[in-house]
Length: 514
Image (cartoon, rainbow, N blue to C red; front, side, top):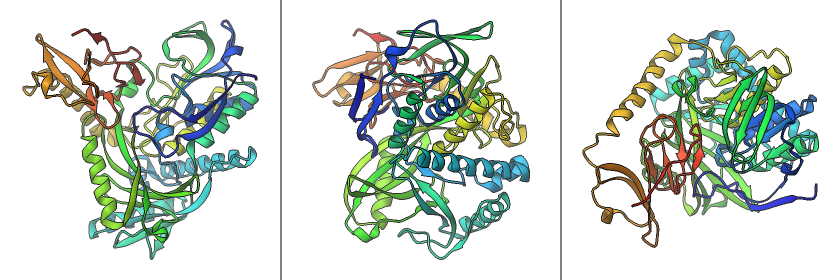
């Protein structure tokens, strides 16, 4: 290809720079070889780890695939992850065993091991220089209640088939009561990894179209007709590797959006950086690791999660910084960013054929384990499309009904959505004057009897939008740290001009002339 695109900074879905964005990142554009009317075996929507793993595995099996990314490769959650590679998950094995049985817990553990093996295998096969390293993982307790929970987790994790044992350290400078070690966990640079997957996908005959936002899809006579702003694409199979498929689907009511916060810090003591992955057992929990970028070490600390548009991002960052300063002497906070993920009603992801059928697949509800579940999603979906029975097809099926495991969370999430429909429209605390709005800030105000989403830039220019999310009509909230309008119901996000940044909405917010 002659049209090479080299980025020195990979964009992402928020204002804050993540540790991974500094390039150069090279992607060979293949838009020029796309021809309308071509019937692809699969269209994969989304250029993160799920989409690129699915696309590459399909292409390697002789399928002709096209990957469409609304913005650029790694723009979404993969560009904002902390890139932990684990064979244990945010939903611990004792919970999985309780809800899905011993065999279910063993199956989940097997899928984690296979995901890890797929990543390690692709790194070796393509000699990917993505800082892939094996590290010990530690899970630790700070009080008696957490220690009892840790005992249960250790027992169930061993029973599921994952190697673990008690340890005399937790690998970091946080005091602890009890600790468990899980050997041979891992970490890598997520953008270096997926850009190489993209390169190999193209080398094997795949087509990538960036800046291609999918607006509509219809299925008739075994063929999907998918429309973006600049193309019409036809495919036998459609894969939404976007966390949430566009529009209103059953997944909107079975998975809830969360934001997680991350700090990349340089420490005053060179010997203080952990050489491991470490996690506490609090709720919300904290997680540590170290990564070297351009010869500089950074302590990566994440946590302080909350539902999207329900908490205060500035308070979450402050809590994370305070937590870091409590245990480490910090030379500099070099990076601060947040990222979005979805948590399922019963703790396990939804991967596979959507209940509507029609050869439409998706992966969602990864919780904080996107690198692992995104990878195994690529294997499950590619196997299903190729007619290969996946051992994980049933346990991760989006069609599963688990009333015992999922009913309470299901009701809680949807009761919250119902509350937002009412409370956001009849709040008594609306700000009446734009004079109160600081530069660089946004809020919901009343103007001539109507609610508006307004943002004031550094020069005092005000941009006004209709605040009603175009997905299910909830009212958006302003995210000051990432400079976006976020929906508290299903996680749709919009930029300052109202353009969709993160689905499931497919229609931008309407601009309003003041």
